[in-house]
Image 1 (cartoon, rainbow, N blue to C red):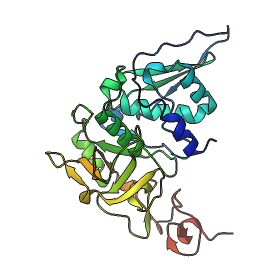
Image 2: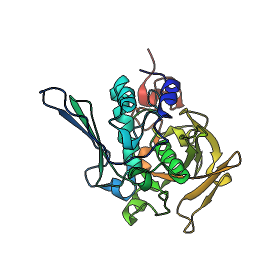
Image 3: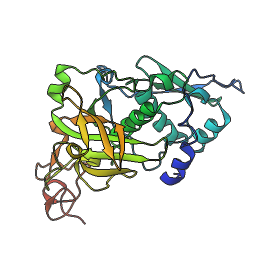
Length: 298
């Protein structure tokens, strides 16, 4: 697997260009083309009202090689084929963040065709072939950060905020009722290398608790290249309705941000008798040393 730093350098080649219609290269052989469709929304379509799955793991993925108006170009093909599994996963999340629901983006290498579904539609101009605006760069970066997961596992989350054109991501009353844990704020700009940042909203988890969503809730820098910058309230301002953090400022730069919420059942407690992926064996009562749930080591 390519190192994250190597992948990051490659990906910056693609993020600056547009994301328009895709021309698939001709199939060079008579073999049947295999199609892989990457789904991100759940069965009842909750992704269309701001819900998303957050299985993106940064180790081995990169923000590189992507020009949506050149998915059939030699540079994109070279990047994608170097590590197709990781590239395919990254594209799944990138297209979901950027492209509107109901649209797809497709890439074919002649033997396999990859189809990625749009979802949140945060970057409409970029999706239609224009260079990414500053607002689009920021909100897509925030989205990718929000979908990051230290453990590479899927956890359903609620994503709140606005598109680059200022249209709020639709939500429902049932969504807000189910996702009651205010997790964090995500912001930054991966397009120009300024970085990717996360803050916690309601506070860090108590010592006995853990979550697969450790990037915001655990503090520290648990999910590089995400940098934890403390609380959202110290750096961000809410939208007019007070529903989410609309903008966050770090080191003198103000970014468009996204806010995430979780379900209570996605917060785990050492001592509940279930060994969760965020817990490990040991002799104590902390998630990383949880004997009651995961037993003693050895």
